[in-house]
Length: 176
Image (cartoon, rainbow, N blue to C red):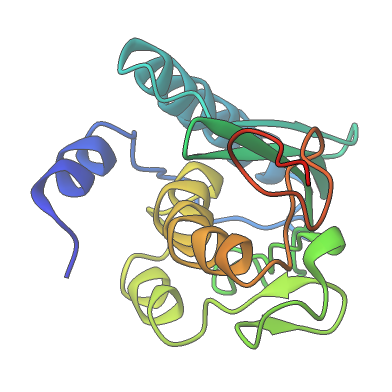
């Protein structure tokens, strides 16, 4: 169950109206416009709450999305590439978000660095077709996944901050 803060944040993301995917050439531009408007609104609301955590951009036809996402843990920012393609059956099928550099580091991931959203997010997406879009994917799919997986990967040493060498110990250096 989502907490109240999550519900409030998601309720401010505009719901989409156009039921079209990339194959519907006549309606796809309208759907893509709605996607951009929802993403812009979500980014604005994140910035207003001092919770800016991702950047996305698409190819010209809106079928391939790339960018970065980041997670702050113990005052250190961990940044990752993120990418996904819009499935041909979109919006019935949610995109599969990939964080390629984490591929193979957690069981909650499929080949190619695709994060596991099947158990929690997929049913929610299915109940909300066509109203949910990419902003909802980020808010209810990627954000919770990062919140659970990144601290765990850090604690296991699978993810190390760029400025902190692997095996280094916090605190003062010790000499014999």
